[in-house]
Length: 419
Image (tube, rainbow, N blue to C red; front, side):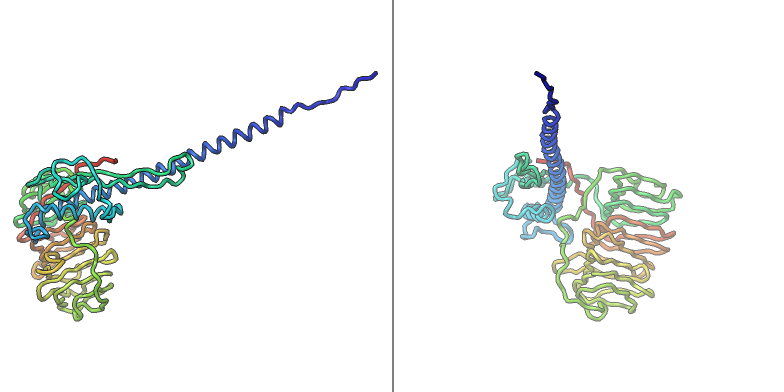
């Protein structure tokens, strides 16, 4: 009998291939879950940053609305300050704009107050005192954000909210309020009855040829140059926030589109080169939806009860090749405001004067724009405050004058806490 040995293959190889496939599948699931967590965490962080921006803006708007801003002397309901209802409305409106919290979303919102909650209000908007308050705390109603991939790991939503506080804060005030940097060579500044505050860096001529005369000068960043002729000497302060945020009428009204502001009056205008001399604007609101440039030393002035130039995000004002003498309306929605730039407009506000006719009377609000003054010129503002994103004044003998200054107290954000 002959025995034949058969070559029997071990099933080990196929078993290993099966095990590898199983391990690969398990690792893929783990990797997908990790990717889902990373994506959702990133999304949650972005939502929380947006929530914090919304809370900061709401708190700042509220504290600014507590006390009427010139030329107003009463609250919107004709009562005397503090204007709690105005502050609450400002906080809710800014939360709506910046974090899409509907006005109905505050119903049922509760938080630990900082001392005082007006009757009928919510503890999510509270004040430090019922009389002469200086601090506001805003706790945004938490929103539930659905996850993108988190449901794969059993997490279907993330709760997002934020808390911010702001206060009227510092003993510093400003008529010329610069939210960024102020840079000048030899330009002089004269503020009659008011102050200058710079939230960024203050750079002046190292030769001491920049002469300042104000009630006070302050900066939050760094100082460079010579303070020899700056009276009083600039002092270092903590960073501050926009002193008019929440009080400025925002949103350009809808007005008829026109082509010649010198003859057609109030309306909406695109880009223009104005050479008529003089160009007299009749009273009303002028929506500047393009670049307005003066040419050939044209004088831009107004008649009647005043005008406001409302510059949209697409517009700009360049008065550097002409003269301007305008005054703010004494009535209506834009009472007291001579120039308003859209809060997102970063275009320059260019001025240049001969020291005789050039004058802007009223509040100037251009929080992201740089006020530029070039050449050997002098320009006068009356009243104010003047709130701008920055100042660049590089003329050799130029001068910025503010007569009958209206100082505005500087608010600041106190801090934040995600919730």
